Image (cartoon, rainbow, N blue to C red; front, side):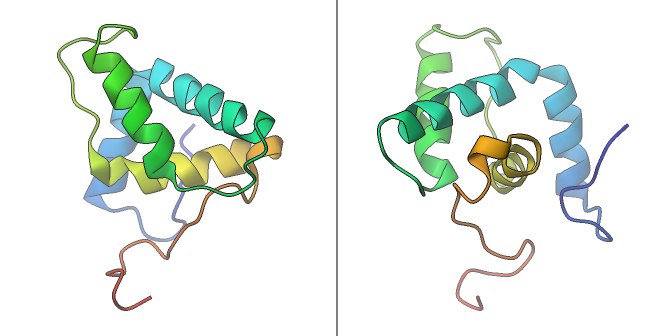
Length: 106
């Protein structure tokens, strides 16, 4: 069952995110692992971009499975919210904005 990260507003981007998430579950696991490493090192809040870019780099260097795909930046916010929803130790770890609102408006 899919739980919407942005209840009441399932956009095309969110639908694509869930499809990607189902096809590449290791991305979520790696983002959680990297986030927990930052927390172990004393960081309590950080941007999803930090761990997302490390995950991207590791996949490009063939250190992770899933060659031939790209990590879409549109999915970062959904991963951040999903991890904070599912992983109690990551609640509040990510700086977030309202979905669908340009950053200059928030």
